[in-house]
Length: 455
Image 1 (cartoon, rainbow, N blue to C red):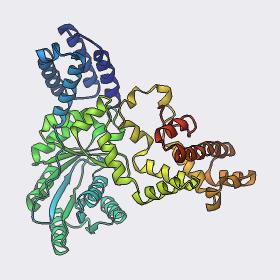
Image 2 (image 1 turned 120 degrees about the horizontal axis):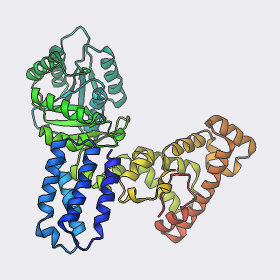
Image 3 (image 1 turned 180 degrees about the vertical axis):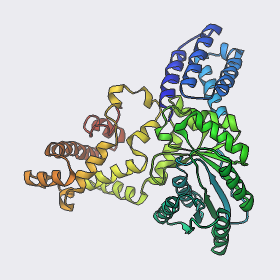
Image 4 (image 1 turned 90 degrees about the vertical axis):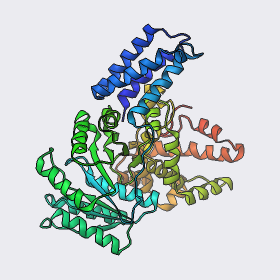
């Protein structure tokens, strides 16, 4: 998300950073460029006007004009204004009620509402240590009920069955009673979506809301719809007492206009953003971190949190001890490292959260992709356990078998083995030199394409 906006703003503000003096004229030019960047990112016009006026009012003050580094002072103003647009701080879920806490999910069809119900249930399980029951009141689309049931089984949460012949209110009330009987902490109620907003839809969801009185009413919206996302959020806000918004498909949204507009237009906080299709692809929305990403400052805090949540500590400690003892780094170790990267959102997911990632030369980022990881893992999976431990055993006939099993070719096998040999040598040096930085520099150019940016 924000790829285009980030590129534009980073370039605009880069031109300011080295300036020893700012004038009203070059501030005006900079604000014109920022305005164009925001409009091209599909940010709502009233939001753009408010943002530019606010920056201009503060930028022409003495704090910026007489600052020792006026360019940096103006960049800080832009950063602060982006945070203000998106809500200043992270708004967590309010679950402070007699259990079960009921969460009602609303939104249009196709926004990813049912998947988001499962993602939220997973997040509550893992991060809040809550027991969760999910239920679908979408009696118009039986596939939605089946989809939620399948997702619930995959993440091991309670699913309350429903039928298309039942009434939505009766389904939700029965599910809440079942949750009370089982002492479950949270009930998430999925609702019917429509292809557009209509009176029938709004009346049904109003009736459902009145009958179950949820503590949280969350609007799920597809961020890729841009201005339409803002308009539908506003319409739902007029009909329902929304407590928050969840943006979905943010990884496919290069503009980011919805994220920058919704809070200002509706007055309701963005509480989560959905990333990718994986069931754990849901992140709390931190305006300050998102603003830092937009301006190319990275998001190390989220990266660290992802690492803590997804890295298998037992495996990591086992690996560290193995290397410390001087044992050989083998292909099974290599595969484990690739899986850790994948669990953290892949190479691109990590890169986007690193400071100055956007400043890397285009040639350095063109080859950065997660397809190479999938190919390497497929090759390693096609080997026998003995071959993974002792790659020197892999001769011509074994290579042909591995290539056939992994859907690659012998050149890909040779390339991986050559790269792995270099890595193995560097791991040996690590135990002698005790320097991770030296090892990373030594690996430069020897990893598969896209595995590491220039140091």
